[in-house]
Length: 235
Image 1 (cartoon, rainbow, N blue to C red):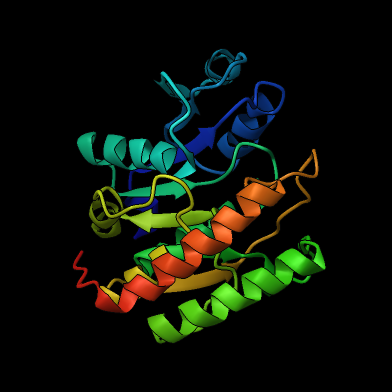
Image 2: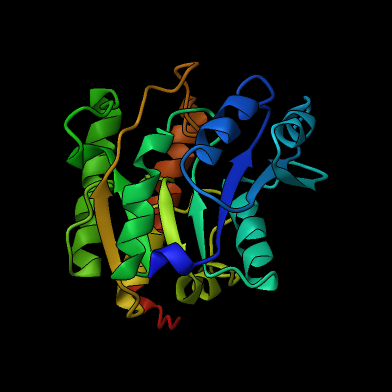
């Protein structure tokens, strides 16, 4: 079934001019179809480098956040009649060689999450971050009614049915992580995980880097997960 689907690859990017061309090249070796790089208000030549690699670009005038950049991609996909979205990060951490497994799993799921913890050769984050991921994953698993091993993974494949859910204003503009996966499962959409290989972030940083940002993330995700049982979400 997936072979006949029109798949849009969405890559949210912020100040990734030095890496984006290599990421787009790697993706295009694995999957046919359009690659959309969403330049989330970069101050460098991210958009120009993406176009030079053959990608289509959408540019935000200001930095709106990781989730907002993804939503731009989801809405583009719906508007242009795509059957599914494959999303991955622009920093090179997501190994394009895992793309076929993500796409194939759309045959039996609406949202496919690439889990680094199911792949023996994948990079593991530092202990403290891993503990936080385990905690939020445990809560999300309880809310979803199924095991969620990698609640912060941005390496995903999303069916058209799930795109309508993701394109809604309910989708967080900043950190769409464990809370979104819990809502997906509770809404009746089919959620699954597949093993993917992830690499260390080239600069050793993540979107959660910095003490203030980490504290905000913990507070925001705790609040969002706490509200999940009170939300009646439908796809």
